[in-house]
Image (cartoon, rainbow, N blue to C red; front, side, top):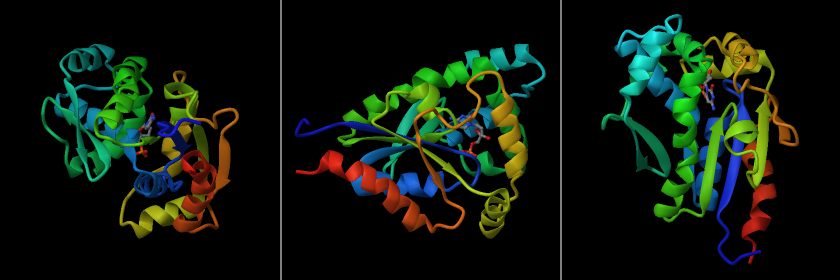
Length: 222
Ligand code: DC
């Protein structure tokens, strides 16, 4: 093992499976750059809606994609997306974006436009002096980083996931989004073969993070 390993942790899971909070915790604990790819799909979706593009009109989507300039700003240990120099705000969690995001994310051209961007986060992590990257999403362990050092798959019962969203005061069609995300043709959301699977239904966030950390910690052991 090298003295200063640079590691990639891939975390996949459905809506409200616990992946965002746990990946932030792991990022902080091990000095890994945190990357929430769902927020990238949401930001692109907000931009599409803003430009009047529709998932049913591929021409309008391609025209809008051709114009996108994607950048990254690191804030509080997370790699935040910028589109044409602007960081998207709370609108990416709006009901409109929530309802549309899975439809835009199913379009191969949209996924393609984010592929290199997501892989490029390793360079941002190295440049920022992080010891690695923890990236969360739906196809990270299967498509973006199939050779990641650690690949986790988080899941929880639907009723519990709906309850978590309610508690956050958010309106989210958790199971409907999972259904669309799992049934798309390109990079469908599924458990990556060989990933470490954790059922978070009955666990606290701290317990989930501890379980994951137990796998990662030996990599940094002196
Ligand atoms: O993680 P999230 O719920 O904020 O993600 C929003 C949507 O983005 C999700 O319903 C599907 C899409 N997504 C994706 O297709 N691939 C990813 N790697 C991350 C998110």
